[in-house]
Length: 104
Image (cartoon, rainbow, N blue to C red; front, side, top):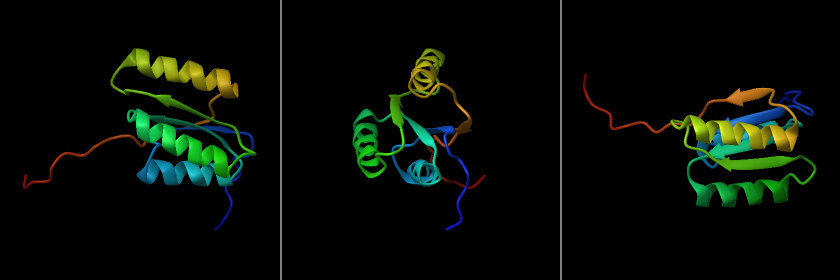
């Protein structure tokens, strides 16, 4: 795998507790980034965050339960990430749930 230079950058990943968001977070950690995971699922977020912290001890990490449709929730998570990491360099807007598929 090629290496992306994210050394000492802070990456916020929305929807980071599973799926594509988790894969992005892992890749960012492997590339030297500090990662702030944001997700609406508190239980899954806590498990994923603990697993990533155990696997990537050398990189800083933080997590926040965030409802992206609530401005106060996003602001609180932003302030928590800034307090933990000092800055945000990258935002990966991955969160979202698709509805059912149908003919249009």
